[in-house]
Picture (cartoon, rainbow, N blue to C red):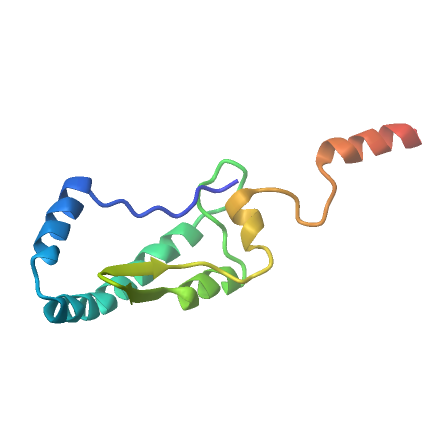
Length: 123
């Protein structure tokens, strides 16, 4: 199972930014968020492909990419919007196999121990 994509920002920096932004008039705050949206898009568009640069394998935290369909679906899903006085950023994928890569599991196959048990019954 691969690790989820994580973006970490220092809590002290977030609190300082929130204090400064909360002191701004709403009209200026909206303009600041609007100006930040391209930066958010650009940052995510450059960070996300790094998680699809792996050779795969069970211990790899990076995904191997065959067609690029999953990565492109994630890149296409980036949404930054205003929700009151907050900027909400969401990313995801509607590709059928995205959940397997994020949460693990089996893609339409029986778990290996069930297949071994069935093979033993046949013999």
